[in-house]
Length: 181
Image (cartoon, rainbow, N blue to C red; front, side, top):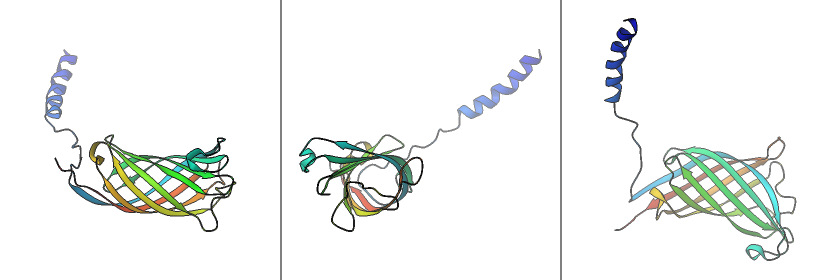
């Protein structure tokens, strides 16, 4: 009998809760335009690609692979993956890019052009506290980022003096999508 009374008290509460609306999924549809202002961190590791001429670069190519997450007021929480390449022979930067994935599975594609002071990327790059600036291009995507374009600037600082190498990033830019049916 006691169990029946408890159950009778729980049933109205469950019925009230099922009538509540679920969380609203915010998903902008084109056309839209917004400003990106994101601070985020990535962890990274460096590898060597031994083929000469990979990505149009001389000799073995150094590759930096970054993964991280962050938050932007317009995009919300996101994950980011980036790959940067440069020649270990002459320090010439090669292709750089990756993507941001928002909390709803939309993917925004990115191309990067890093700028270091000096004559290029040294073979022992990145050193602790190296500051990297550059330009970013947004080149389409999936979901709400399908057809998105835009550009911006990036600034990041390398921290290799810890157990896991990290980069602290700050990106600013604009993203727009004008999708015509």
